[in-house]
Image (cartoon, rainbow, N blue to C red):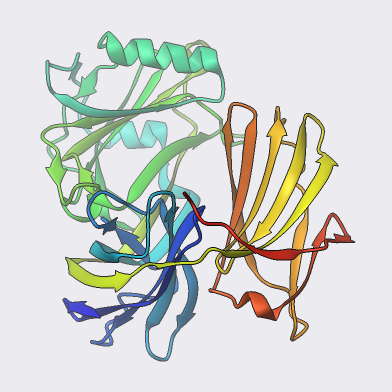
Length: 378
């Protein structure tokens, strides 16, 4: 158990089955400020410094006590049953997502709200981070070339910035259309800019939101909140228009994710990662079109399907697990890894289960003859 900044962390259980390692944590805001919530995210999570779990997922949330249970997942290979240290550095709560919300401006209106645009190619070292995105590889290549050659100029910030409706952590500081490039420059809060995100888009008179190639350039010295959370003082968001089209009459929209709370501290605890070697297994030979399923394994923490061949990423096999009390076991999203011709699909459970309580397992509707056996790495 560890408590810092009024938030209490406790390890409820941790298991390594040889394929995956899973730890269940509870996080509670003991001050009643609602900083945990049902959208809580953990950042800067490490285990014994050399191991870091790939993800953390909310399993359940109790609003009455503001307590969340999260599942941390990672690769179990090489981890035994020794004592393990876990550290959490940041807790995010109150997540909100907005899609294609109006800024209240057409692009022309926004540009007219400030002085005439002034811009210049970026100076050496002025751009510290970049992001590009496009649905077409040719557009991606063009964006990369523009970024690499300084072909995206940077605007000079206006004397007065412009508010974005519903956004209190960022403000528009300049806007312009330069040839086929639409520029929207914005400044971000030095703290919440490290966790929140925003993106701009254009909607034409017919009501269609355009799918445009975009680039975002972080301008100025990066502010590091932690090893994984950081932001730039300002960003240049650029959309490429087709054939030098005018966007003056198009409506400027924004999308993004924001958080109400960022709590930074140090939550540290030591626990034993229990090694379990008992699994329910059944060999299977099922052609999935390009690859063949060869084995189904159920451990106390995960369902693992292994096979070989060339996976075409089509419809995955359906494996369902029923418990003796008649309930179907809830299985998390599936992750897939392909090494050469070896295929491994893993789905983590939302709780640690007792294998004695498993009633039956079906594969594509057919019940499997599961056998209990021990798998110990040598």
